[in-house]
Amino acid sequence: FNVKDRIGAGDTFNCTMDFFMQMGKSAEESAILASANARASLERSGGTEGQLDREGLYRLVDNYDLVERRKDGTVLYEARLPEVRALLLDMDGLMALSEDLQIEAFNEMMRRKGFPNFVLSPWEKAFFVGREDKEDCLYLKETYGLKEDLEDIVRERKEIYLELVRKEGVRPNNGLEEIFDEARRRGLKMVVVTNSPDRDVEVVLESMFQKMGISQPPEEFFDGISTVSKVRRQKPFPDVYILATQMAEVEPRHCIALEDSESGVRSARAAGIMRVLAVPHEYTQTQD
Image (tube, rainbow, N blue to C red; front, top):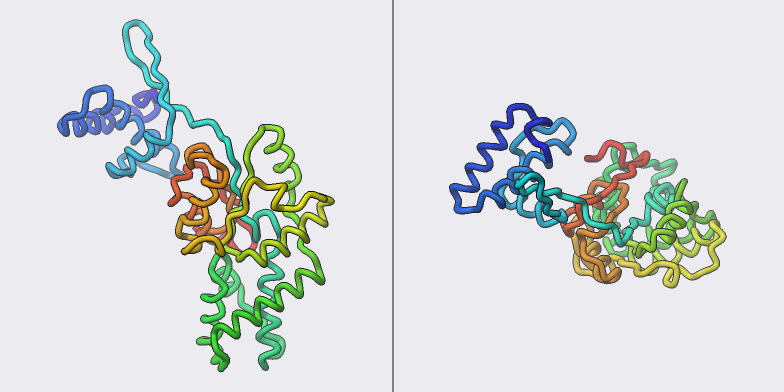
């Protein structure tokens, strides 16, 4: 990591080494842990030294491939990012530009319930994205005094959304076709990872594939489709990503995830996926 040249005097690096050696670690392991700490600090935007706790250090080291080299009698360790073997893709807002239809379904439902010209505020739109339908419908019920049972509200909103999908279709995000081609060229597994239930996923992916001119069924095109219907907990819990890595038959450290929301990023990270790229859009650009 060449810590001293990149940080300066390297005092923090030396102190971190001393800390681990006092815990009984060998000089070799202490150096690796101290280097990982420095590396993590340097990779963080505006980061400073010493930001990881002990558990975080071990987790970081476990995610790298450590390659030993010897030079002039000195043992050197190079930490390399492990090979990428699987690409895990969120659906709504990442692959499929379906968020506008999702939001419009809420608006249309409220209009049908006696709120003419109803439009969710920009704050509400951002608040809704990445959450479960039931949570969003509960917000509407409590905020606007809807009388119907929550389950009935959720069901009606869902039917309106699927009506809109079938009527207007779902466009793919810019660059998605190139990502598919590159993943195939590299021999990567591809798995869909979504908070949407099976029924929604089937309708949305078929609509998107139709617009892309892909004749292959989604369940054959992808190496797996991990949905909220198949797990106990939704994002930001890691369940759907854990299932996705199992579908791909690839360890989390060999995966890269593409997400559009904070809850999705948290879900992937909690599943042990170290490379997570956030591609924000209109509704998620203010999220962490």
